[in-house]
Amino acid sequence: MATQQQQQEQAEIQAKLNDHVTQFPVNIKFPASVTSVAASSSSGAEQQDGSGTSTKQVRTNPDLIQHRLLEAGVMFEDIQKLGQVTEAVAEFVADLESTGCFNSVQVTIGEQSESSSAEQNDDGNTANGQSIQVALDEKRWFSGYIGGGVKHEDLHTGGSSSPNESLLPKLQFETSGKLQNLSGNLDTTSLRYLIDQTSATTISLHHERPLHTVLPEYSPLYDWLLTSVPHGSKASISGRAVIDHLDYEWTRSYKECQRLLALKISNVSNVPMPELAKGGYMGLEWALSFRDIMPRRHPTLPFSLDASPEIASQSGPSLKHSVSYEYRSDTTNDKFNPTSGADWKGKVEIAGPPGDVGFLKMESGMSVHGSPFGNTNDDDGAGTKSNSLTFHVALQTGILRPITYGGLCERRSISDRFFTGGPMELRGFV
Image (tube, rainbow, N blue to C red; front, side):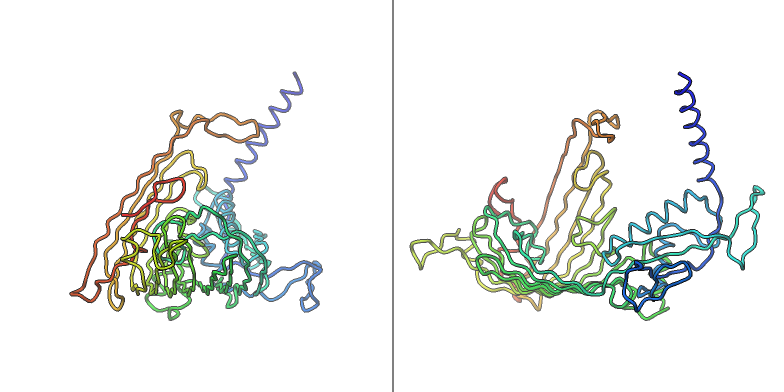
């Protein structure tokens, strides 16, 4: 009994101590010190400091690190609670590591700097000027991959609005190369070549970098982006060129050959798909794509088609020139297995000259997730909480209106239609 009481008292003392520590005021001095730290077993080109740690010259732009610290919530030259600084630093570390340019990111809040003296706040507490050190373990500027796997034709090339649900998986061979953080601004360039078991090939070239790095330094737009826009240093500009062959014979009765050139500006960076963006996503994209629709042939009659008349009438080559804007908002508690919250998406696309297809396409959707038991969760026995019953409601809608531009764009393409899904859903299009 006495042991339980002692443990309870120790827990209470520890909780009071933690609360006191998190409320302790600190003043972070500007700027943060940015260094590149490697393991002591690294190459001899690196130098040894007094502590025996191997260091080398940092490749990442230090100014970008200062902006990311500010956007994470680190207030330089201002009094903050230690708990607030700790949360901001944790967000900063997670953000940098998610870029894929670093093996690890270490942040240390140091002692009082020599040039700073004790400052006294309104409550009479003394807050010392603390230096902050950011140690970056940067990955190599290049990487390569050779291997194989299962092909996923998810239409990331921008041809249609719904994923392909092929009934039979296809094996593929892949070789790719990647340049990362080459200019020190967390930029990435990747080149991929894939070929599947049917000899269908995919070649893609993609480059992404922060938007402010392509603007004139200290120009009005540059300053507005980094000082007035929330998380402005994460806004990105990307370009991609894709040559792809998509097989929809099982679900849509045709194959499609694509040649795509696209340029996109978005409010996030290093996110492979808009669906994976945390919080919200906004993106504006210009695209020029050549599509060639080849309807499925009859297996025994070589000059007959095994496809619907609608698909046959819209087969053949077409050129689409379009501008699209997409917005997404996500308040769910888990992106892949949500039990509460909602997410919403909307997209507007307009196509016209110099392409030969013209249309206005609007689509939106939302889903709501919740439990009838509210926030009362049951322990699953593994130390985590989970709802035993969760309801999910989803709604999607879209409008497609053709625009001829006075006869300049009378071509129609099946790729721009709305599709109802794959093997587990109704087949067809509208």
